Length: 401
Ligand code: HSE
Image (cartoon, rainbow, N blue to C red; front, side):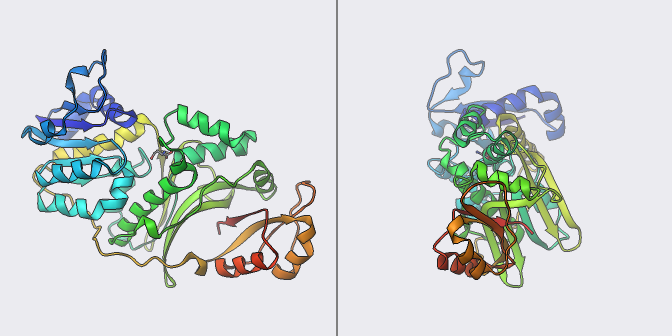
């Protein structure tokens, strides 16, 4: 029997308990032994909860209990999760986490500590909720040189953008709905400003490179400037707007960014809607492959945490290989990246826009006093220079090739 502790009895933590209880027979068979939850750590009490008796408030009880072999860290944030995780790994207890903030900030260090102590630090649930993506990158695509990842990595913003696209819904109202459904972070700024997707693409990019891509080096733009007018234009162009997180390993360098993009109907990510996430991976032998599923929510995320618990149970005393060194990757300036842009300017700037960007075909959806167009391919730097020259724009959205 393997005894487990769950740190944090919130949305994901309670999901972990539910997954283990609901699928007990199957999980025990796959783990080749019985898994039992011994402790649940939380600051709160849960009177009347069926697991009330397992709730403890003192982490040292868990840390000093030699029977505990696996810890599920579902607390979120880096404090005290970092300290708790480090102490657990140093004492040879494996940790399975959904905490992308901690993985993005301290992943390589914690992986190294796990290796030195013959245990595991596993983080399948930290990216894409229930979608298997860490394991495919670590174990399945090992014959590939991966040169591109494009992901819809945040369920809350994808849910909001889908509703805005389909129903012309208002941003604030949809955000509230996403929070009620348990998709959003406690602080929704992390979702809508792209910070959550930034941490997730930092993790995937690091696995792609085998070295550390710091989330602090990734250009990040959220969805707060996207309006219903932008969706009118997108429809006219047969496109939708998605918050994309991407990384590219090219001859010009390694690029990573998070921003809203216009994508056409033909792109496989176009039909990834609602809370669903998808990761589109390009390898030099395989070509494209895509991983799709529920990217947020209690049970999908908990299912991924428990899949890591099963992996730990199958590898007791052994560390599963994970290529993510502490050496830092130089992330290139996105201002050197080339792409097309969709631009809206006030109607009185039409001539100036034509002069700066060349002959332009107008995209007209009947919005008075503005001129909208698509640029030619150019670097972000060239684009910014031209926009500055005409004195700014109403909005601009990058176009996914
Ligand atoms: N707030 C996150 C999302 C939760 O919406 O995707 C899953 O990481």
